[in-house]
Image (tube, rainbow, N blue to C red; front, side, top):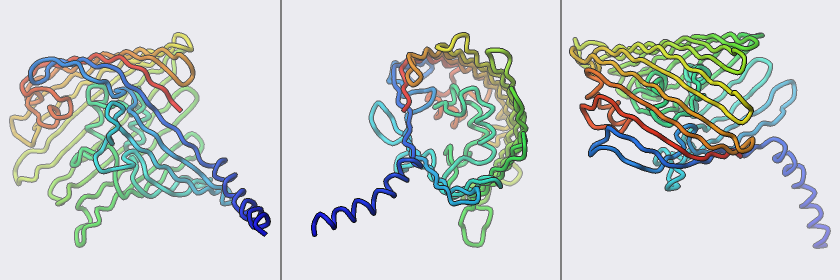
Length: 353
């Protein structure tokens, strides 16, 4: 009787196990090394490099065929510090993604914590594919993340992505959930791009409100990339407006053109470089809050295998005017107030699974 019961239980569970193995994927990035930075309070410092190029993360994604060309999909992705094991976002287990939805011939519809449609395009226009872990290599994050919470993802988001030939388009909405105020804490964005053999071009839009609906931040972006032999050229332009919570105070306005290049001279070597120039006016919504920031970086990656690589990176930020005292920039880069420039150098190893 016991043998019969065991046979029935095993037979009942095998289909579920088989299905999970065929439709669920575990993946991740893990890296670390050493980083030197100057321009900090007290001078320069040598510290642990928590994988500046791609961050440390692991995730689980999966899909189930529902028939009729429709699949149920999900994704859970966690980010962490390889030096300490701590979560990247304190108290948030799946800081990078936590969504569920459907994917089919009519597009992809997802619900949960995820990037906005505007961020989706920004990732495609970034030589580092949106994985840079600091403004020293990803200055455009200021334009595309949650400006009022400094979060790179949006909570409670409904997102749709569609495709028609080479045209890809999408829209997303993050309701704030505040009774009697549909704007408070909300975000709306849209994007469209056209992709062809060797290139893509697109534009995006995003508008978000703070928790009290007293301020909004609005972003426009455009750009593209083009394959030129063993290289891919990136060009982008971003425009940010931030309203003031104080009546009569000016709006903050940033304009940032950027260019990047990724070259693979051999299958084992990849070289990446980029430059961005941010012209900001009325930072902190102050009349005299004008400043400029020049960001540039270069990366060399050597692949020991398809999954493991060694990398070396150098970055430079030059600051002028109000950018030298901007609280957001100082906190993000970890620099001292009033500094004219900061330089960082990182070396490390990264593996994927």
